[in-house]
Image 1: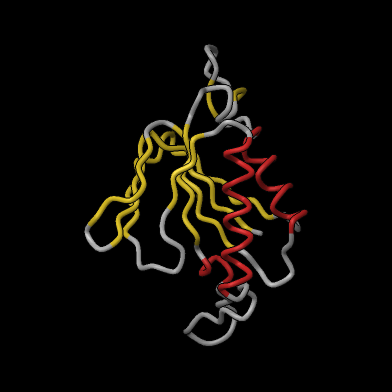
Image 2 (image 1 turned 90 degrees about the vertical axis):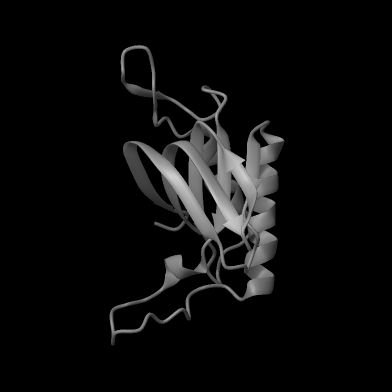
Length: 147
């Protein structure tokens, strides 16, 4: 499981001209699932993200998590994170999980974050989405459950 994490002051996702998810201060997540991923990847990633200390404390040091700052999460599925561009000019998406597998794990991931008391907004799995955000910092990280 791979996630691009962006600390944001606001973020939203729009499908067919309608905003379906919007947050203020928190984390924007682009979430990719590969064939081999399972529940242990979901658990590791959700727990890592909920406790990841990338928000500044009173001393302007990154010591606080999204839980600590009562931030929200906007989670958007993103199979293109597993696009392999090493050969040719067109990405190969063979490593990305099939939609039925990816959607189930994506939903488990979001549910696990919600179970921790976090507000989680989402995009629409498999839809064409317009994502807007204001990256705070900017702070952007890439997490991978397998390395």
